[in-house]
Amino acid sequence: MNNAFLKSFVTLQQVYNEKAFSSIALNKTLNFCKAQDKALITKLVYGVLDNDIKLNYVVSKYVKKMPKGDTLLFLKMGTYCLMELSIPSYAVVNDIAELSKISEDRRIVGFVNATLKSIANTIHTFDDYPTDEVENCSIRYSYPLWALKKLVKDYGKDVALQIASTVLENRTTARFVGDFDEQKVQQTYNVQAHPTPFEDAFYLTGKLPTLDGNFTVQSLSSMAIAHICANGANGNFLDCCSAPGGKAVYVKQLRPDVDVTACDVHEHRVQLINAYASRMGVNVTTHTKDMTQFCAEFESAFDTVLCDVPCSGFGVLNNRPDIKLFRESLDISNLMKLQQDILQNCSKYVKVGGRLVYSTCTVFDNENGQNIRKFLRNNPNFTLGTIVLPQYPSANGNSTYQFLPHKDNTQGFFVAVLERKE
Ligand SMILES: C[S@@+](CC[C@H](N)C(=O)[O-])C[C@H]1O[C@@H](n2cnc3c(N)ncnc32)[C@H](O)[C@@H]1O
Image (cartoon, rainbow, N blue to C red; front, top):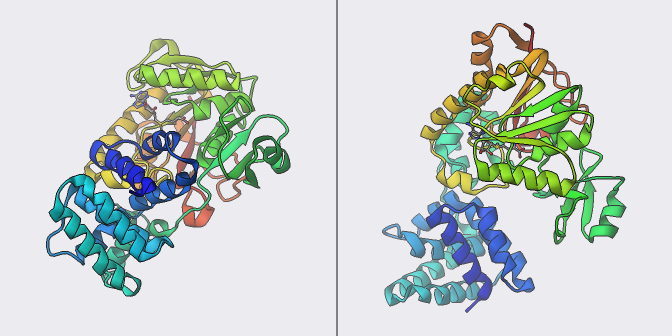
């Protein structure tokens, strides 16, 4: 049996059936597989998840009745290999049919074999996509239709289609402590490094080394928010939704003179902040707290308060393709309520003259601009402030900014800077 196919199948089962985080499930698999299989397993797992809607659609065009569960997964894996990978089609059909024997049902094996053969015969000329532009884009780029319709409402059709169809490359970025340049990164860690807008951060390609106190993997969007918080910070800084500590730890490293307090509602996630701060050798004070609930000790106590709130994650689909599978439109209204509660409560922790920074990693106006507009209506003692982020001139100097993949070549995240006047 093709070992890489088997390992990919088991990993995908965990994501589809148990809603495991794709990156965590994949990392566990990669720890226990042969070196030569790792690249194919990674490509196949991310490829099937990234293309889930399209694969379902294509399979549906080749069967009378849509299969479910493992049978559908065998077909999606096979179809992905046939459409996107340069594995000979006879090998794909044979190996996936062989893999389907783990179902111990000869009818399934026969069905998978026959369906994949017929897909293999015609897939290279397949063009039976919907004619409606929005539906077409949803299928081709596997962007959920409900989410794409929301984007059309927020941005208009043209921009919505661009957001949904932009595929960002370079999944891994890392930042380094000390005087690392591309050459030193390559020499020290044996990975290829390419510049990013931040001097201390690089795109990495190659096998990632084990994390140490000199470098950490972090998205550019997360780094950007930390820079916005650190630029012009003084005194003390509160990160309200901090785990696993990406932004809080970076703020402390950028501004060692600033006292950093980091909170999260989950005790086990607060331990992640502690572990991360300790690995990077910085001092961050942590608390386990529900930040929707008022804490008198924090009242008007901080110069800068960051609310990096839980969100739908539609700006980071390239790193978290499982979001597209499980998020539903109903989730957004629950999230908005939580986001507004956190923002409203934590605004009380900002000193007069201090800054309140709000951020998400999503592209929906409901969770971004709409929350800020509502907050400003209800809190006339706050006004719009200024984003200081010279590395991204399009955002620099604004009060709020929606980063978009097709425009900013980065993940879709949102930031607003507010100031407390009285
Ligand atoms: C977007 S993540 C934060 C990422 C983090 N700022 C970083 O850069 O590493 C949102 C966090 O909010 C936390 N959270 C959710 N509800 C919360 C609440 N009511 N109070 C405090 N934290 C909460 C979650 O546990 C999660 O860790």
